[in-house]
Image (cartoon, rainbow, N blue to C red; front, top):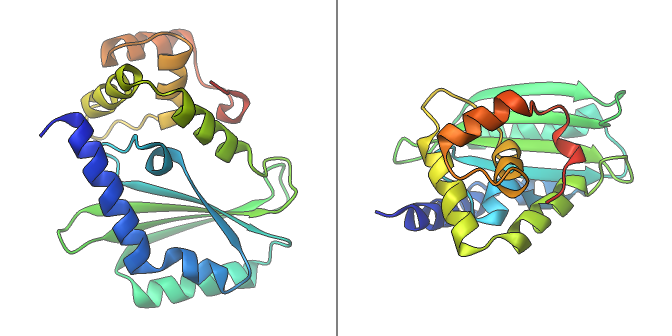
Length: 194
């Protein structure tokens, strides 16, 4: 199977999983607005099966956020849940990272970032995701997917770092990415726009 087919299949599987798991509906019960971001939205999902959601509410209430996660934990086969309270930081969010094992034994990661509407980073990742998607040519998509495919198992490189290397540094391979990363360490991924 070629890389484009793998990415398209992963995207379809992810959308099917979102629908089956009813993640968006669970967050909507507390009045949240949900945005799909990252590799799922841009069609750049390769080996890392990550579903990135940005979840917005007027106020950040820990109890409400926990109530959604409690519902998801009771309903889904979540194998791991991580929680980070960043309400009193510049990010003004609650981070949830959950692992889920599907029927085919694939492990998915749900990154659910619960953000206060109107905060400094409201919409930032959405704008970057949209910019990446709009500037993707078939050649750039192929390069990014190949690099993601070539990242060794166990090595974690944020997608945004790969996109920056390809768009800004004209990187075309995993070997070039390693060199780029050595010379251009990622300091704040939220400051970059393609």
